[in-house]
Length: 280
Image (cartoon, rainbow, N blue to C red):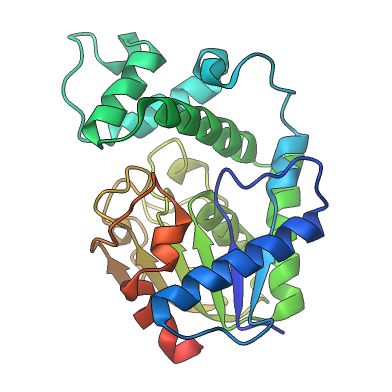
């Protein structure tokens, strides 16, 4: 039994390493970040890590070419996902024809400039995010989606945590896992930098599907808190509570993100420490 089950976002795949090894390593990292934010060490074994990235990458074709060319190799589905995401950002008008007429590299440059980000890292992030998110959401019955969802559900069932703490794409996987298994009861679900509300790209592809434009809190979750930094371009559109009215607390305050959509800054934030304190 652990107090917290952590569910990661994109960019956590470690090729050639056993899933158990990656999960243990990431559990140590997340525990250290949480301790830094709260000023107190977590008890040994207090955090278990639900690692699912290997299921997604098993369903992806082997990447060919240089990493800085990754944007040029996205599929039409992945390009559409990027376009839907950037439509929710406060970007300057690019062309009279709109974003569909703009090459992805130019669009990535605009995103980087808008959020004061490194251009090369932004291109790599967008390509990776598009591939992993689209692989998970490609179809309702996609094997990778089922495997990732059931992996997360199995870790929650095994550890019976008080808290499920999910970041980025992990908020989508955790949301679906908890809905698919209403018998799983947790006192608190915390979503960090969540893209759950992204129209068409994520929101309208969720399982269960939104009803009348609204998603719902998983039945076994007693309380749901969402934390989204003002400068996080992935956590759009905001506020999340507009699309998920069952959220108990939607915190839009700044957690001073240093890295682009990085979990570390969220985990070290005073806002998260205050949210978790009654449960830890």
